[in-house]
Amino acid sequence: MSDATTHLLLPYILAAQAQKHVTHNEALRLLDGLVQLSVLDRDLTAPPGSPADGDRHIVGSGATGAWAGWDLNVALWTDGAWLRLPPCAGWRAWVEDEGLLLVYDGSVWIGTTPTALQNLALLGLGTTADPANPFSAKLNAALWTAKTFAEGGTGDLFYTMNKETAGDDLGLTLQTGFVTKALMGLFGSDRFRLAVSADGNSFFDGLIVDNATGIVDQPRLPRFKGYTNYDNYVAVDTWTKIGINNTDYNDQGAFDAGNNRFVAPVAGTYLFGATLLYKINSSTNARMRGRLVLNGSTEIRGSRGEISGAHASEATALWLQTMVPLAQGDTVELQGTFRAADGYFAADHTSFWGCKIG
Image (cartoon, rainbow, N blue to C red; front, side, top):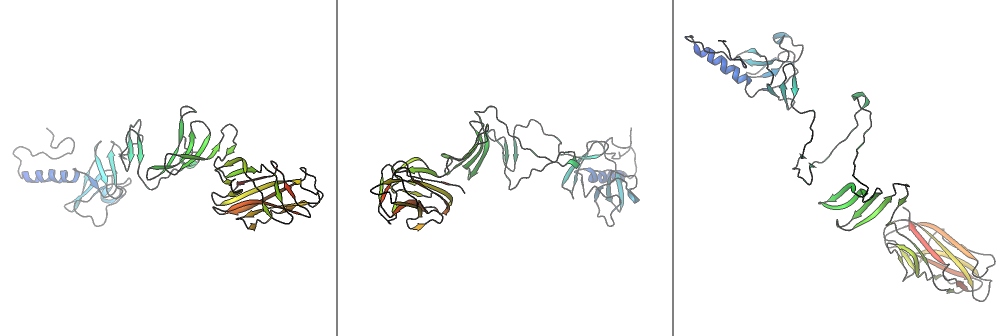
């Protein structure tokens, strides 16, 4: 029969042994050093200068001094001396200065964190995952960084999301208080879409990119083209608002045909243009002039134009174009007048258009 146990090498009390308490206390001392093993560190190669009773260390490789030859063993300071505790496969130790749990595999101490997690049904980080959200994370920041070439990587980083068919949905849902405010991705097709919502129910497409052509569409961009359906009479030297009372298109309803003016739905930079077609009243001596006016009173710089040469009825046209920054609610209207003789701005071909460009 051996004098010690197989795994922890605790000494047995032999038959008819004198001073049995010595053997018993030695076994207790070993148990106290090994059970619920927690070491201060694992990188020292020489004993510290002032150890406290019960201090334990995993000895680093290349140990010297009292620890010479104890590489990777557990060193226990007890009763004023260092005690060597050779580990066996399967021992676990908590490393206090690293907050790390190690296990001895028979030759080295290794971390207990697995190197691979495969086919998990649920994974929650800081929260509880469920079948509807099998991966859930509750945190304040996340980082994805490329594995460098020096680390065996390429230095690149790609994040890939895939859907089964073109008719399926694939995208990012952006929420406030768990109410969806924006969607970005491929929804119901392979076209890229960016849509926004105020209530999480009704969505407006802000951007659509055709995957086959790369053509970009902004369905909600404020834009219009209006025209007048009657001949607008204008007296000499009298700036008069042209009755643009119909539209070919009017996205977001920004053109107010009832009041013959554009109303900016949002602040931004807008591009406007107009065509004024002359129609005779009594004399072709008339000289046509046009301009765009901000908020009913301020001529927009760069928008005024005039045809100073001879006019031909329903043939002579004046084109205007300018760009202007607008605040939400600002209005822009088309005005015209004549010098020398009165006349009309002809129906159908006198038009006014505009769009937001920035």
